[in-house]
Image (cartoon, rainbow, N blue to C red; front, side, top):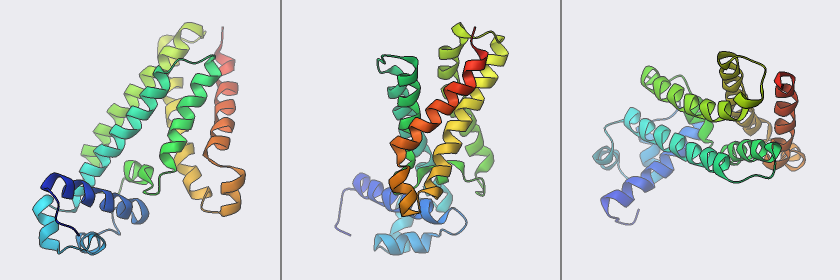
Length: 201
């Protein structure tokens, strides 16, 4: 690798490691393999990160930050209708899922020694997204506030699970062409709105 300032080298290594973890998962990844893909020695890799857990934590946090920014932007953008707002949020999740480094695999992988730590961060993140969905539903629902929050949480989990699951389906080229991220986001949007409609006033 070309000699770069330390901060740029770190970002370059994170990009390479993110691809490696996204494809192979935590258990099947190693510092040796990441160093090899980065064309550096393992001691050089350890100059930037304490170990595999340290790299994984950094990637996990970067992915969550990026996903949060995409979803927040989708929520905050002016929309002509409720459906358009919902679609923008769902489409943002599918756009994120379609990245070649498969970020949802890193976010949702529960096989790491860091799980107790990452799960707290994950739950906090999901809570913030749930709060945003709750604000869309609370004024037009016959449910109690707690019930509305429960439904909002289920919507959040459904969108993320659907986007992550789609990445496995989309390995099939024909399915990718027929059900790309935007087309699938349309389907998921209609499914969610149809389900939520039963709770309308």
